[in-house]
Length: 412
Ligand SMILES: Cc1cc2nc3c(=O)[nH]c(=O)nc-3n(C[C@H](O)[C@H](O)[C@H](O)COP(=O)(O)OP(=O)(O)OC[C@H]3O[C@@H](n4cnc5c(N)ncnc54)[C@H](O)[C@@H]3O)c2cc1C
Image 1 (cartoon, rainbow, N blue to C red):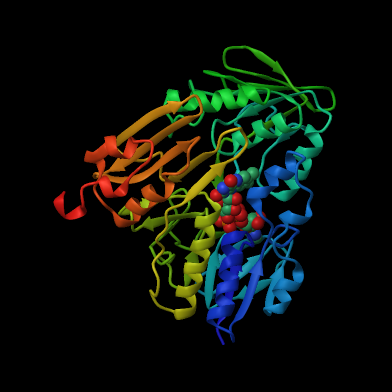
Image 2 (cartoon, rainbow, N blue to C red):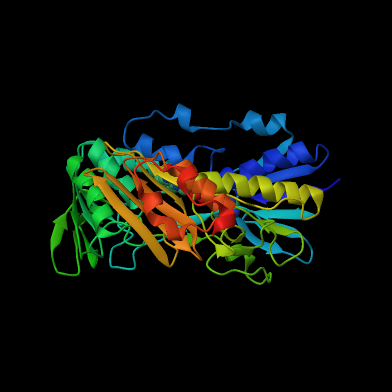
C-alpha cells in the first residue's frame, strides 16, 4: 500500500487528496495543515470581510468529507522539516510521518512591509479565513483605513472599505494600480471604480512608517513624501513569501517558489508540488512561470495526484488561468500571464471598457479585459492553440472578436 502525504489543505492539496483517493482506492492518504479549519473557499473570504456573506457558504469541506474518503487529516499541525532520505515529514509536535510520495501544497504567506511599526495592532494582511474575520471586525464601525499594495489582493482591501462605508486611502508606489499589467488608460478605469466606492487612490506614494498610539494600535501611515494619512486600521498586500522553510537541506530546487516540471515533479524523487507555491513549466508558454489563482491551483493538485498515483509522467499540466474582480459596477478579468510578453495591443471602448493583450513570439500569453469579458474564450482558445496572431492586432481589438475573420494558421 502506497503512503501519500500532502502538506497543505488549500485547494491544491485538497484537490490532490480527492484525486488520489479516486486513482488509488487502497492508498494511505494523510493531509497535514497548520490551519485550524478544513478547506474553505479562499476567493470568497473577501465577501465575508466586506460584510456581505455569512460564514457557511465559504466552507467547502467538513471533517466528514475526509472521513468518508478515509483520508487522515491533521489540523493545527505545522510541518517543520522533511527528510527526503528517510522519507519522513516532521511536525512541530515532534511527530514523524512517513511517506512514499509527498506533495508540497503550502502556498504563501503575505509579506510584511519592511517599515517601522508594520506589525502594529490594526495592521492586517489577507490570506486566511481568520484574517477575513479580523478584517471584517476592524472595518465594521471604523471611519478611516489605509490600503497598501497596488495589486489583485490590495484591491480587495479597497473593496472592503467601500462595502463597509469606510473612508479608504489607497497608497500606491507608481502612477497607477497594477502597473505591471495595465497601462495608465486601463488603470484609470479601476481608479474611478475605487473612487466610486469611496476609496481615494494616491499615486507616487507608499508607506515609510506607521504611527501607533500608546497601546500599540496603528493611528496613521506616513508616506515617503512625508504626507500623513490617519487611519483606524490598515490593509497591507504587497506580495507573498512562499512557505518552503521546511525544505531547507532537502535539495529540492526552489526559485522564489518550488521548481517543478509539467508533471508537478520536483528535482527530488517522489516529491511533488502544486498550487501557488510552484514555479512550474508552462507548456503553453514554453518556459517556467508562476500563477496565483484558484483554478490553476486546483488543476495542479489534480494533475500532481494523477502522476503520483501512476508513479509515472502520466498527465501534463496545461492551463490558461483567469482571475476576476467583481467589486465595481463593471467586471474585470485577467487571464494567462498578463504581466509577460514583449508586444502588446490595447484599446479603450468606453469609460468602463478596455482591453489589453500580451504577446510573446507572436502568440497570446495573457491579457486584461475590463467591462466586456466576452472575448475571453476566444483569447484563451488562441492561447491553447498556440496560434501566432500578433500580426492581426486590429482584428483582436475589434469589439466583437470574430475568430473566423483571422487568417487560418496554415496561411501565417
Ligand atoms: C483574499 C484573497 C482573494 C483571492 N481572490 C482570488 C480570486 O478572485 N480568483 C482567484 O483565482 N484567486 C484568488 N485568490 C488566490 C487563490 O485563493 C490562491 O491562488 C489559492 O487559494 C492557492 O491555493 P493553494 O492550495 O496553492 O495555497 P493555499 O490556499 O495558500 O493553501 C496552502 C495551505 O498550506 C498551509 N501551510 C503552509 N505552510 C505549512 C506548513 N509548514 N505546515 C502545514 N501547513 C502549511 C497553509 O496554512 C494553507 O492552508 C485570492 C486569495 C486571497 C487570499
